[in-house]
Amino acid sequence: MEWAFLLDEIISQSLRDFQSDCLRFCEQHYPTIHNRGMKESHLGKALSRRLIHSYENIDIPANFVQLEDASSLKQMVFRVDSPDHQIYIVAHNLISANVACRRGLVKDTCWMLDRLDVNDNKEKRLIIISDHWIDRSAASKSIPSWWLGHQPIHLPEFIAQGVKLVDSPNSLAVDLQADCRLHDGMHRIFHPFHRQRDGLPLFKYLLLSAVYPLSND
Image 1 (cartoon, helix red, strand yellow):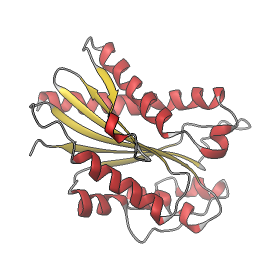
Image 2 (cartoon, rainbow, N blue to C red):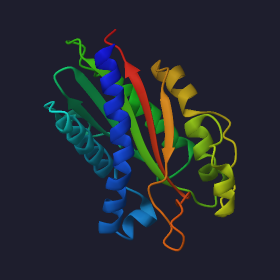
Image 3 (cartoon, one colour):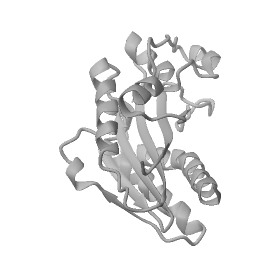
Image 4 (cartoon, helix red, strand yellow):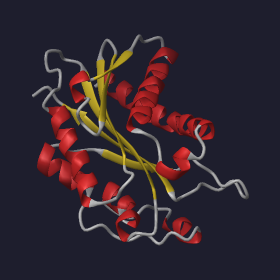
């Protein structure tokens, strides 16, 4: 339990710190990210490096690799290893909000689960990391509801910035449970970018994360 608590703390802190990484990356690659979001390779590698940095801060050695046989997938899959932990990262740019793109994320998550390293007793977690720019389509406006399973608590702030969200008929958590047998995940939405004129978060840009415990069974 102690190692599980430490792992969850490392992941939680890394995701919070990752927002500043996204902001710096956006500044370096403007206007590409403002038009299309971050590439899967950038998302996965940057989060992996952030996790490594979190381990280094508490003097725990760690490294990361990209799963080589994942090269044919749209999503990038990375694995972060430390002496007692193993973190799998599925990175995906939701450049489209359509059903095929959402199903692709679930499908490749299931693919990754079939390739878990079960030959050790390390505490394991899965992180799904994604981003999305909300556009005028109903599908795009339903992404927060689909990701969280409900509307975000900052709904009035979305409306104040001209974004009227809509409900999704299904949710990522339900899809992952049905297809991949994943459960007890924590789904979050971050807004790392801020408007220049008033410093408020830019709610049209979504940095999306989902963290799931994994077993060796």
